[in-house]
Every structure is written in C-alpha cells, then in structure tokens.
Length: 97
Image 1 (tube, rainbow, N blue to C red):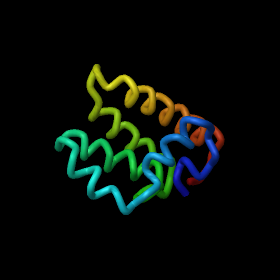
Image 2 (cartoon, rainbow, N blue to C red):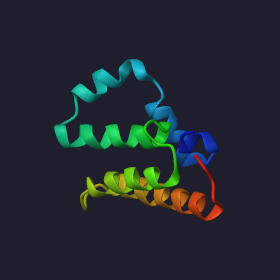
Image 3 (tube, helix red, strand yellow):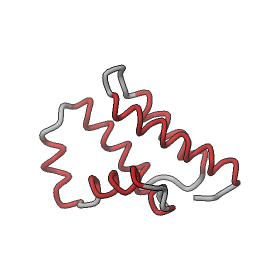
Image 4 (spheres, one colour):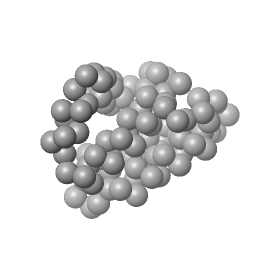
C-alpha cells in the first residue's frame, strides 16, 4: 500500500492529484531534464507503493529521493521532510505498508 493510501493530510492529497493520471506521465516526463526524470520516477514509486513492501524499502526510496535533491529544490526538500516524517511514524508504529 502506498503512503498516500494512508490518508496523510493535505500535502499528500495535492501530491496525489499531481501524479494520479498515468496517461500524461510520458508527456510530462518528456519535457523534464534527465535529472528531474529520475526524481519523478522515485517519487512516484514512493507515493504509489510500487516496489515497496516494507518500511525499510520505503525509507531506502525516500533517502534515494533525498539524495537527488539540491539546495535550490525548496518544495522538493519539504516533500522529502514530510516523507521522512511519515516513514518515521510508520516505523515507530510497527506498521507494515
């Protein structure tokens, strides 16, 4: 189950709507520079739970996403902080994704 299926608030809802339509991914991705494409791919995996079956795999994906950010990615860094907070809460709760 993806993070956003847990109902984690307004930011999650905004992000979900931004990534929800698979039919336009190819068009959107084709307009991005290569370094942004990898960020978007990793973020989609996190948000929709693909390739994630436990909290450790989720944390690995989140930190991989964070490693792709630079100091000027303000909104993306906020998303990273939000995702790490969710991951930390899941881990403390002993939740299985």
